[in-house]
Image 1: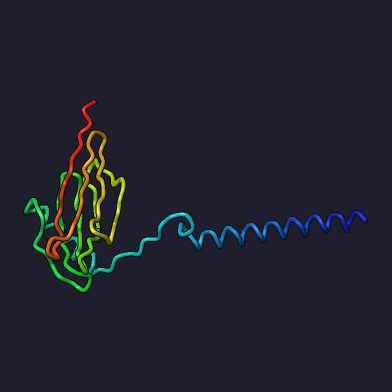
Image 2: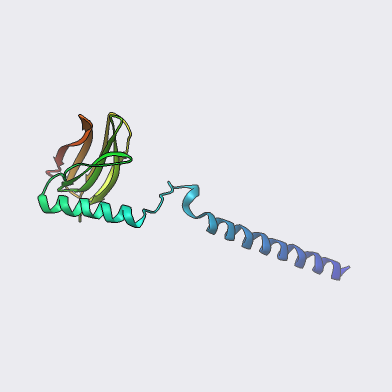
Length: 150
């Protein structure tokens, strides 16, 4: 009788270990897709294009000339809080990419498409709201800066 009890307990422990290992493996494969938005990686061509736009925006201190692609007309903007790439397709604004400047983080984002798309770059004492709209089919940016004077 004792051998059966020991064998039963050992079988139960083995089954519990196998179940735990299988579950852990499955969760690892799924990654963060269960609780967070899945972001697709950019292709080499997309990275090169976005870097060229952001670099040109940084050198000129303002928006880059619009470029037309399959997704509509795109334009990069440089702000004190970071860089933004907006697009207009069928009269609707969208944010394609953004990158906060050092000392800033991206807070709220409304990527669009819609009448306008916007995001907030926030630092310890400053909040910059960037809004992209379409003016005659070309992305246009407005900027609102709120300084915390504590």
